[in-house]
Image (cartoon, rainbow, N blue to C red):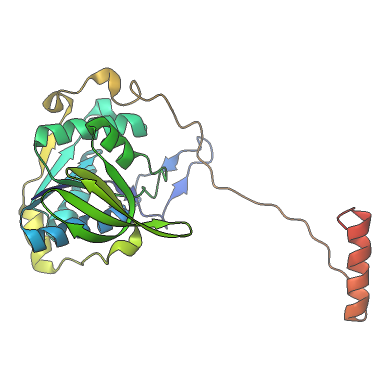
Amino acid sequence: MKIIVSIKQVPDTTEVKINPETGTLIRDGVPSIINPFDENAIEAALQLVEQHGGEVIVISMGPPQAEQALREALAMGADRAILISDRCFAGADTLATSYVLSQAVRRIGDFDLIFCGKQAFDGDTGQVGPGLAEHLGIPQITYAIGIEELTDKHIQIKRLLSDGFESVRAPLPCLITAVKQLNEPRMPGLKARMKAKKSEVEAWNCDCLGASQDRCGLDGSPTSVWKVFSPTRHVEGEMIEGETTAQKINTLIDKLREAKVL
């Protein structure tokens, strides 16, 4: 069984700062981590390979520093890591990103499953996984909270819904997006980290993928980020005075009637 996991390196959410003049994220000097939902995706793939045999291939599109996230995935137990990096990929929205990832998957060749996190902590769109499935023309099951059955022909997934759960079966190959409740990602030991540090991380650029540059980066992105900012809320209030609770309640009722709330 061949399982591909698409991951993203994101800023540590507790350390994110925003440039007040440009409204963009300040990434310099900010610690980066594997997108937490992607860790659940890696863990799901590793567990399936442990049960059924095969290999786990982890891919990530990003700048050279994204290699750190790939090495973390190798330390967790992935068999192969591929960094998809090129200047022409910069500024990609979810459509351009999913296109580039689909070209990488096509170069990898035959596969059984693709796992992604349900969304990235920085963009928070939840669109790249489904977009990747659409580019590849394969079925997708999102918000996986449990893997109920896997054969050489199909997979059955328990999906998390806003008001409950549902069980969905799809033929292979298939793309799955993982939620946090799917599993508990393993913590690599020192020996595994040392091995991953010495392991090869393949690097693929636009030419390697045979991707059309007009579909990559800003050129291939129909949407763009105009501004990023921290939401603020200003609330004005009034303290209701009174000698007793009853007096305070009556005063509040009078004010609400004056405001035509009551």
